[in-house]
Length: 85
Image (cartoon, rainbow, N blue to C red):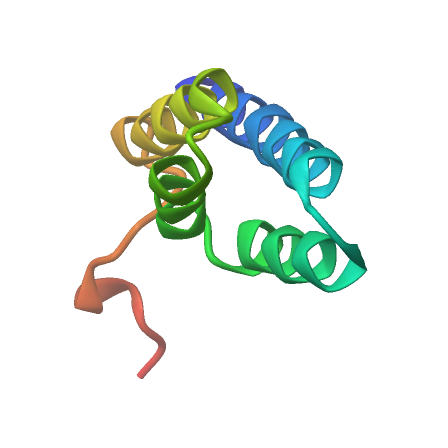
């Protein structure tokens, strides 16, 4: 249940970061680049976006909090023992 909450919080934060990136871009190329970075590289892309653009703290905190909840809830397993043999 905690992992599901984490996924939802992560998704909301990620969408919010993408929208923020598109809204704060100077030109079309800037908007597309930051939108794609925030789509494909979360949570690292959100952290870089925040430090470069100085915007998007609340959605970034949602992404990080959701990521932590996913790990605590067992929804994101990074163990080698879970790989198929």
